[in-house]
Length: 152
Image (tube, rainbow, N blue to C red; front, top):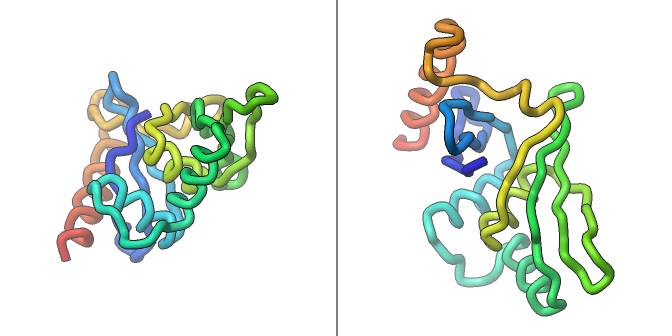
């Protein structure tokens, strides 16, 4: 998955949009404001004067010689997404439970790939308009509203 953008929905909540690289399917995930800021700054290539929490985590992992191999958003339960971060450590690979927003912020900072699996694949929204016109219109309306909010 490609982390495409972070914006606000019509109710002023933050949402990160993930896009499947070779298709027109997307996954919107609503996230907290601190994580939205961390992701948005990294997407824009802006560096804060002092490390944010995700920068600190990346720096600690780098100093310890631990590499982030991948991020996987693997489950959706009661409208809550679950993710893990796979680390390459001196003791082998370790999967660490994480909120998707934190995992995505770290993936951006370390160029780690982002994957989805399990029930999350069923959550993808097709934006081609071919499969379900109502879904296409709903998605376009959401993106337009997000872009308008972001520009304001």
